[in-house]
Length: 320
Image (tube, rainbow, N blue to C red):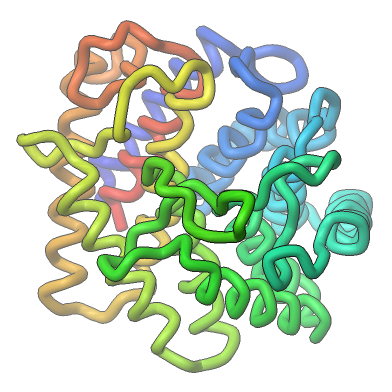
């Protein structure tokens, strides 16, 4: 475990040395600042290494350039996680007020419920509603306010009935104009955020059924959303600036799910998979001396803060 922590620490040092700024990192998209924060908060939680606290504190308070509802939810979640470090009331107040605004203005009865992806209300998709689900569970765990628990159950109930999840447990990108599964690709982060909400919901309710659904999705993703060699990959490589963050989001939530699972063959399979992928990332980075490629099987040449943070996420998951 300590070896994986050391590797994650080396990757975090590279992240800050190469892409660090006074208020975060030179992420390709503004929303990526927040899952990068979560990667470093997770590193701190697992290792006790507090040296990134000042950068975390500055990054979560930099909330400019967020245009879509999922952008805001990434920020809400990271602000709740940062609040758990120092309990600055401004962080939780901002997260709570932003959450309230989103559910008040952008959840409606179209498609029987669900949160719109964009303020113009053109698309209901998986990631926005998964982030709402996970933000609800995280806010409940932070505040113990029943309204967040109710929203977690409400958002999960809608999502489960939405047809976005296939029989194999994998989630596609969204709904079409007729409120049906639009058949869009199954991106890795669409699987990952769902794991986080379901894992939390079992913790909150004491009902193991939600974590069991998460395990089904995790196993499906790690068995099928992979290269021939078992390395996590997207349905296609041309995802632009967003893509390098996706796999890290999956790895972050998978690591937390593995921590909550009892010993057994499913946990062993998932942990072995994280270590296989973690080793692939570490090898690609020349043992931490080079940036982590956005494509974990190598060769994309798409390096940056998001790809580096995704590498940190899988290295941490391997320590679970």
